[in-house]
Image (tube, rainbow, N blue to C red; front, side):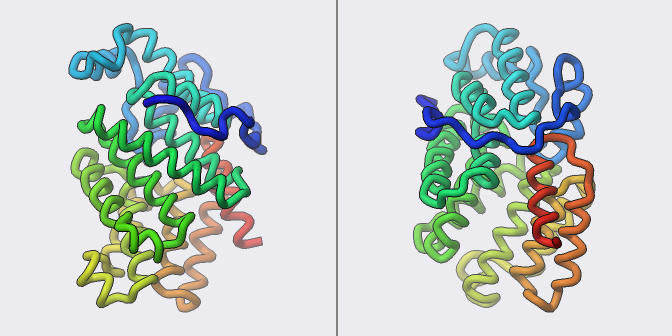
Length: 286
């Protein structure tokens, strides 16, 4: 990967909910990792994991211990809300750092970038980073998931109708299917696949969705519920479940949507991303 995002030079809006509980210094990161990454199944970036990547992809670096330390620090920055630092640190580690680089910049854009054009440009940059990561590390589930994440956010920012016209839906589906094949318990991918079905059904109707895109309401709810079962303490799983119900059923399920948002709002966040998720949910029900 070359460069970072064009917005990096201007400075990024700061994370507004600083909390000492989100500081995973030293051994705290490894201890909290299973909870922090229950949703995305990111492997803990210790020296053994990095060494295995370097063994099969020697162009990505030589010093596994140093890379592991840098990657852990990038994730610490992400979890405490230093999204620009996390992104830039990830970029510096090439494809090995793509997962944290894309997640940090994507979450920041979703919640802390107000300008629509700037947000779309950010997602376009992330799609390019994700494509490079897939090419370099195709055996990692999150190479494919971050691609789906980036294309999915881009699709939402330019409108689902435009995204369908540009063929982006097929790319999202392809990447999510690969993610779940490599990591069947990837809750965030299950959520994203559920929303894929729900958004297409909402946009083009049930029959056309099924015939043209293989999308249907039953699979939408099945995948969204699967994510909740895997990560019941994840605010975003509840939020997207509510969003999916709204797309599929509208006002008929508004009580269930409100209940899902309420659950998300009342989960104690484990890191900066979850704090932003929970805050969004609170704003929907206030």
